[in-house]
Image (cartoon, rainbow, N blue to C red):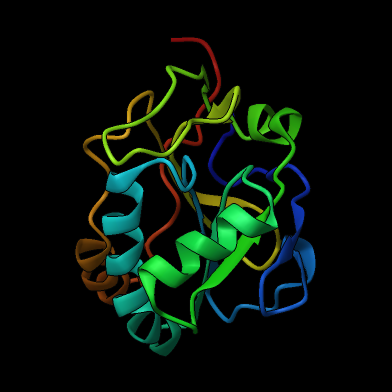
Length: 178
């Protein structure tokens, strides 16, 4: 389990149009928002990433860089990026499932063709949203076992005003006995 204020695992993937992504070298002013999505087969992911793409300039204005990452190969990632339609949103692809597990993501098996007629990969990760500070420590995390009920990006943009104004610390850091 990842712990706030502690280092996150290494994360490096190729992106579609922005070169190689290495979280440790991303250089965000306040944080990098890493959004792991299920893949091209997920219609909920496409809608979710459209919202992220729309708000990417707002995040950038608060010192937050955004990236959407899946285990899909380059072709399927390109199809998703085209469907989402926001060129400023970075799309990473080829996430190894072992790395997904290190990040605490749940792994699912294929159930065949989805409601939109796209075949699910044999194995893929379920969604996760992470806000990682420039020093590589976790600030915020939300991990799901299903494609439903994810954090709202508009709420996150608004919360960043409070967080930054008040130097609000990452919470959930206690790991001692209870």
